[in-house]
Length: 622
Image (tube, rainbow, N blue to C red; front, side):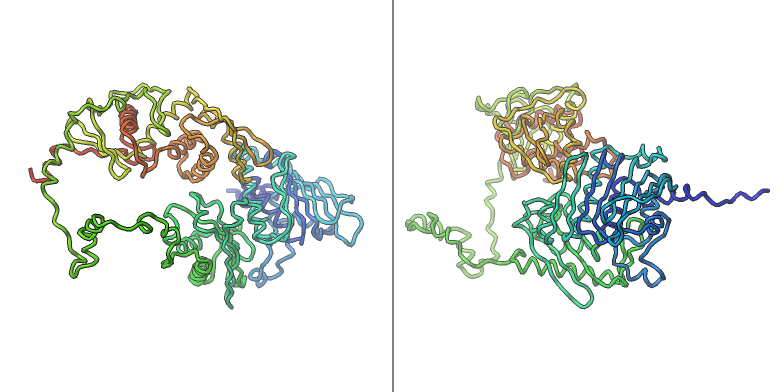
């Protein structure tokens, strides 16, 4: 048998290796920006066309390269930063393995222009499919100018796996922000298709955070700074009111390198314990500085996952530093024994108490509990006569409703509960409202709905979410939602990442009743919204919609429209804690019974629980 094992050609081996490093245009952005930082640049410009598929260009004013170094930079594992194994554990630069340019040149057409300060003529090199096509002297400023054109032109199968331009641009913005945030002392700019997206002047870390994440953080940042012999931590965390439903504004840097670490994120979350809701995420930008010898950054091709020699020490230090910062700025919970001056102005304090009122107060059980001996744990016996007619609560009401409380699904509901304007072909509903029924609301969360054989306990928020989901599902499958034009259009300014997401969602939002138009850099004009959004809440509704869309589980492979419909239904559903009128409750329950799948939300949570009369009687031993 002939031998069958052979060495791969260099260009094919480079293409295979490039798959580990260059997965999409954003991967190349990260590598090229980090190379510019390593070159000592004080100004770095990123230019993008067609979301990086047509062009990625990075221009820096760093130290540049000689003619020989420029040629060697495209060889695999050619690096100036490692000469022996010990150097691998002293790395403080961003790039060091010599894979970036070789991988980029294997899957694109690259043009490199570079010049050192001590020479008058620079070098121009063109590389395509790992082959040098041209190398010649050229006139160019000091620094490096590298263009990557037609990504994956020679691997069409991988190019087909790239997402839409808006999606790829969001990934580019994410990588750009991570590098720009790590080096606030460097000027960065990002231009996409001729339009400037970022212009970040060099400054302090706080200035960079506000430039990137928005001016809303300008007064809501808490400074973190702790130093020990083992490690230092600096940066900023957001006050509890800045929490969001997504992790978007969370940045960890170890020796100025962005990392992802669920372990350290848990340390920060535990520092916020009892200050924020369980499903909320605080903002933080934290820099950990420690000896490179106790960190292994070479465990992942993108170098975003690292290993610590002693994770427990780092965890405890991060948690303590954040806790200390929050406590130092009086953010942490504490007992406040000072009397609010406004209390003195209340009628109950400022006006004298009448004799009758004083008698009523002193005779109350609460007053006796605090003033009489041996009363602290006393439980008053209940008046059992009050429970003698409990079954009447579950019987159909014999009293007719007031005229203004009769309603049908065609009648308009009160503010925020508009279900009109749609009809679906549905099977016969399992439940029907009893004639002249009176509904009751429990804890401003549940609607007690009598039936012929018992009662239903309807969760108002989850029931409304199901109703809205079916309403919007019909809209995206044919019948466009009506738009309520705003008398005074409002403008909304978004961060760069949310701007790209908004551009991606605009066509689908139009189908769902939103009239939104781009208006300059990172700004949109809201001309109209679906009819059920309260006037004046357009901005908040759209911001919340974007947050929930990003928060939507990426593990579940729904289409973009399906995710959007689910997010809008969840966002616009009436919330628990809101008191509903009789008309609102009747409309909501009737519309729920008319749904195709009335018993669960789109996410699988129950919308109601059924309690049958025989079950209730068994509970009471009947």
